[in-house]
Length: 287
Ligand code: G1P
Image (cartoon, rainbow, N blue to C red; front, side, top):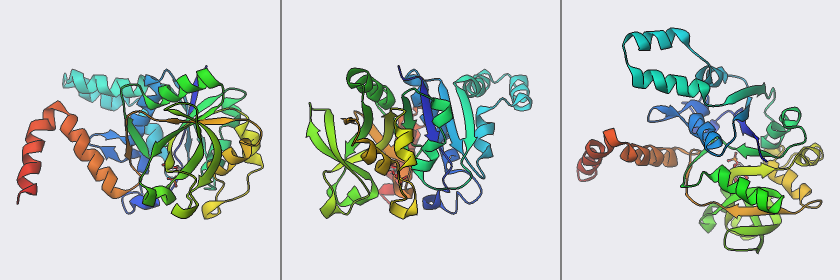
């Protein structure tokens, strides 16, 4: 049973400057909802309610977002705006959220290492905040299902254009079936000529607690940071790891153009915006 999830959220968000100079990138909204709330919702929809957020300097608004705000609630309830009131209560009650601070930004691997006492001897999910998924079965649930079948670490992957492989961790291996790959190689952000495949690590993982020992032995890698991909490559020498090709659409929040596209697609799906927004888009595109 996978009962816990870890969401690393300590990074500077340099790819989104200047918006992230004084606010966490995880709080950037898609329309009216911070991206991290979508990620927490994916955990909840996958049956996980114990969530550890790895936080850091300048990230206090994430804690406030998931906390109760009685003054705001009473103001909203005075206005008899039940829908908004219920939305606020939903955020506060959606999960048991714990926070730990990563004091120095030493990379994703180091961030995950901060979860060792919280996760103890249990497998756990990892969800990176820079992607949001839209799928029939929540992506984390898909990985949990694979974990329950194979009892190995599971890395969510998706095929990317060959010229984009250097943006991602890349997994190579042999297919067990259409969706599942037995991994033999893992490389963080390889150049296209060195990539073992076009299957990119898609920001979702189920990890066994053995990852913590591997992280202890992982030297600094790409960007002089402790990389989770490098720790997984070490772990691969001790235990098998599978990749699961995710079913659904992944929205990459890690760069500005994709963030814009995500906002447009999400707006077109909202009943209150769909028609007027589509008409507006048509009018500007045709100008
Ligand atoms: C991280 C991981 C990388 C993964 C990517 C997915 O990189 O290190 O393996 O493919 O997330 O978004 P980052 O984007 O934080 O540099």
